[in-house]
Length: 93
Image 1 (cartoon, rainbow, N blue to C red):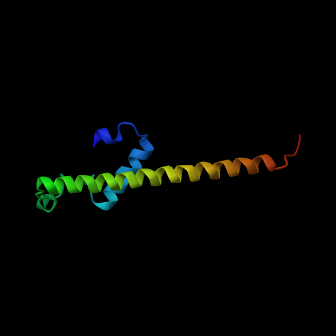
Image 2 (tube, rainbow, N blue to C red):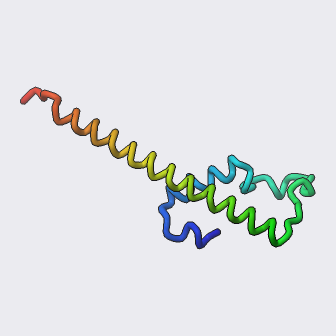
Image 3 (spheres, rainbow, N blue to C red):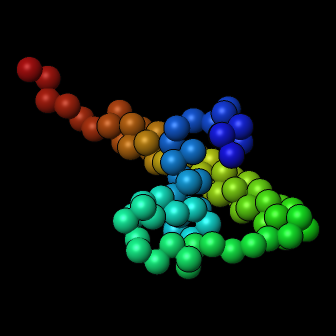
């Protein structure tokens, strides 16, 4: 998974990782302290691993596109706010 995020910003990586955690694909904390570790163990066949990897890849691609859209929207809003600042009449002192 490290290679997948090697060329992406920290913000995009955190956004995608948080989405995987929220979806239950990644367990981020409290695993060592959980006495019932058996609930985390399951067996996948090679085909199951391949399907899970494809599903995760599609999910991450979707989240990366979503991140970029949100980033562009935030940049547009910042530009709008900056434009409004230019329109404000300032009291010369």
